Image (cartoon, rainbow, N blue to C red):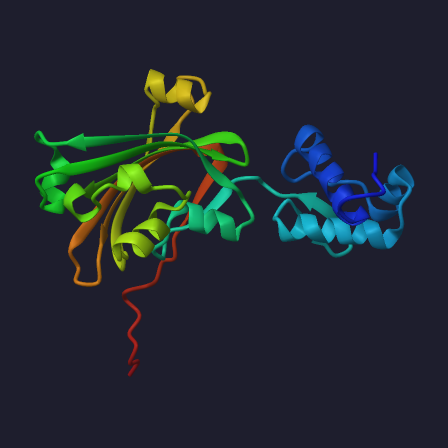
Length: 243
């Protein structure tokens, strides 16, 4: 079960507990208490505690004083209140987002995004993204090809937004985004390994640079059972200068 060489014992135990949680527990269920885990795995209480702390840090479980350690819902939480790529945001939550397939398409005919970006030659980057090895999202990013020449030959990292900033000095400062629930097409269902009846969340975003000029449009289809959208609201009727 454990190896003498390699990672520390508590990290080995964390991986074992993580596998057990994914295979045998649902969100909201309680995993065995520390004394029981100590008995099962024949390791010290300190090792148990450090392994659980790692699972807490990765948002797998939550310890509640006097009640036990609960399995958390494994949906990705996306904070929609700040600019940032999906890759950048998920890496902060200790999730690995990677590209399974990528295709570049240059569009010279009519297309509604051309009107949004005010361009003549449109580039579309199509990607199938995996989250922790599981099909998660289908992404289409549209840009003015003249602003990103040869990107199809040189793009070689997971985060498109980071690459645009580093290689083309394109940075996003604000955006308009809409979210709606849709049914997948047969191809989308096949690519994401889901049933035709499984709902998707469809995100459409138009991003602007610091001069408030539109520079990128994206369409993202995400498996709804793996994702939560977080938005902050405020009361416009509350005056900042109460009388």
